[in-house]
Image (cartoon, rainbow over all chains, first blue to last red; front, top):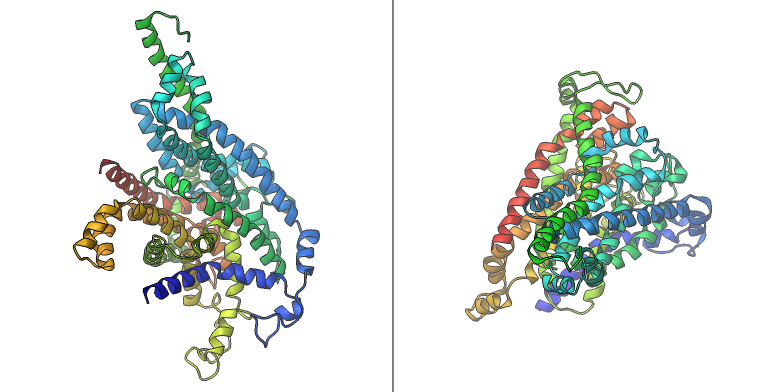
Amino acid sequence: MKRVALYATIAAFSFFSAAPFLWMILTTFKTDRDLYRAQGNPFLYNEPATLENLEFLFLNTNYLGFIRNSLFIGTLVVIITLLLAIPAGYSLARLAGRWGERASIGMFLIYLVPPILLFIPLFRIVVALGLNNSLWSLVVVYPTITIPFSTWLLAGFFSSIPRDLEEAAMVDGYSRLSAFTRVVLPLSVSGIIAVIVFTFTLTLHEFIYALTFVTASAQRTISVGVPVELIRGDVFFWQSLMAAAVIVAIPVGIVYSLFLSRLVAGLTMGAVKG
Amino acid sequence: MSVETVRPSRFRLLSDNERLLGAMMLAPAVLFILALVGLPLLISIAFSLSDVTVGDTSLDYVGLENFRRVIRTPQFQRAVINTFIFTTAALLIILVLANILAVLFTQDFRGKWLARILVILPWATPTSLGTLGWLWLLDSKFSPIDYVLVQIGLLGPDTLLGPGLHLNYLGREYLAMGSVVLVHVWRLVPLSAVILLAGLTSIDQELIDQAQVDGASGLRTHLQIKLPLITPIMAIASLFAFILIFTDLVVVFVLTRGGPIYFTQVLSMWSYNKGIEGGALAEGAAIALFFAPVLLVAAILILRTVRRIEVT
């Protein structure tokens, strides 16, 4: 009896979470006539399924361009974030003394500053730098979201590595820096991979900056391009829209569930060791 | 630094260099953040006290005029009320559901991996795309929810919700408000549940065994032993969810744009409307600054809670 209740509740939660995606998949393959029927069961294919909508999405819209833009921004932001957050994280974990603690609290507070508080002044800065309507505006601005988060995640990771290992290496004649690069970094691969995954997805998710700084259709990212550019006035190409959404959702969902515990450790500032 | 140097001075040098090295490793990140978070914050305050627009970018000091003008508009008043209603309602529902979900996932059951992926999907998906799915699910003419309600006899002529065949979720005041809350709940239950789950699994199993030996029921161990232990973590989960709902633009932008009329208007949307679409940068900045005091309180609460976890 208890088992039945357990499975029923899990099924209900799974259904609630997955419902929009199931509806997206069902919609993707429907013909226009089938989709916009006033009568009949909308859960069935009343006419044969079609691939035309996918064809339309990939060939007649900027969808592939949106994906390319998002991949471009994501890759560059990951590189910038790693370059700045790895040394900063190590510094907070090992080298900075008392003021380092204050710096890390500051880092955490910045992590809580939401884009909505900054998008208007940043918009002016982006215009002043001549970067409006360019993907580079997002490459420059996104690290403000990802660096504080990643520094936290990595600082926690680095401090979980025993100090003895570096000290032994330094006794053997390594400098602090080479002890870090040759001993600590190789042990931190999983933490760094987690940072890559979450930096990338954060840039994929971001909406406000992408909406404000970039207005040329060809330069849009996936999160803004799909809802803003694929809806033309009152005309909704629902099948292509839903396909566009679900094609991004499923791979990201699977990757997320693989890296979950690491993210949680970062989110709660290492308070909960995932 | 070489290993051959004389001992005492070498240690001096090492510790001095370490601090220098630490500062140099931290500096790029800190400078970057100061330039692109600190500076914009100051600009934002300067904007809110000026008459800057997209057309006329010179800053002339106008004092608190923007704040006064903003507060007087009914759109803004409604936005403040809605922001708090949406945040409170969604947060309460999220906490209840996330607790249930987290407890379920401490159990072993078949197909757990699949359930995990499905439950996490709403959080993994870019919010704008997930919300698009809801926009279509809640469509005024083709909502499958309407179809189900008609089939089970709750909607249509001579029924409880009738007489029309469509509820028009996003076109009616309270239904539209409820829809916004629903989408927030949908997208944030996974995040909160995952944080709570981490808290639950970190509880010492012996405590729970002991309680069960003493004859406590499952529900009682949950309420009297586990819940108090994870209260700090629950506080963190709530504060994160709070900030994410409170400052969110995407859900309202995609779902209703603040409509019908301005019944689902929220602060973020109104700031965007005024500042970017309307070009009134000063007013937009002033509206966004209304977030600041609340966020500051949230940040202090999070820091305090985290300290408490570290102490115990």
